[in-house]
Length: 114
Length: 114
Image (cartoon, rainbow over all chains, first blue to last red; front, side):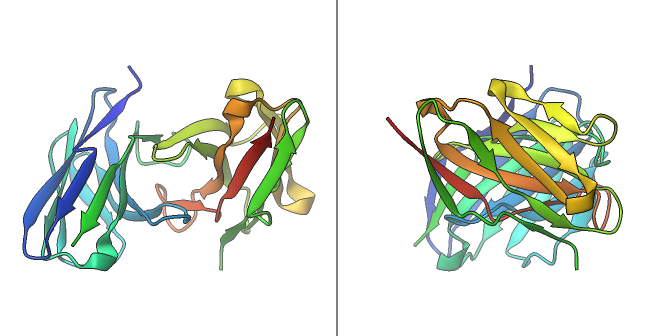
């Protein structure tokens, strides 16, 4: 099984809402990632978790709050977002946090902030 | 600063024709190199990777890429494209600025003419 799953597929939320994105993998990977992808742009790294600990935060605003409850799950909690946060949010995982292990991507959550 | 450049924003080829997508990187050492493909509204799928060894690497879906250190390039090729190859293609470099971080090029959109 080389699948990374993400829910929901689509999400529309107001600027005052609180919502969460969920990512799951059952490949035994110990590194998990959140990326943000705007239309017609490449993915941009937001966070990296390694062995369930946050190892990289790319200066992401605090309205995005990641959580890694166990080695298979990764959440992204959203609060007080802005319309410019509308994007495709991609989750990825890899065996370890070294570059010689490729990252497997999920299908993404399409987020619209109104 | 380290960077990845995909000079062609959009390429159109006829079905059955050969394809070459260009990728250049700027990095002092030999980086970890990847090509990913993204269909509309989907996540990214790894086509192939290069870490070391044979500079011509084979990937999935009939793609190959050649690493040329002297030109700092990692171009993607396919001898005969199929309509299903229409997608966005991203070159990425890993191992820069920390182990896990992937830096993506801006992407090349491939259109296939019937």
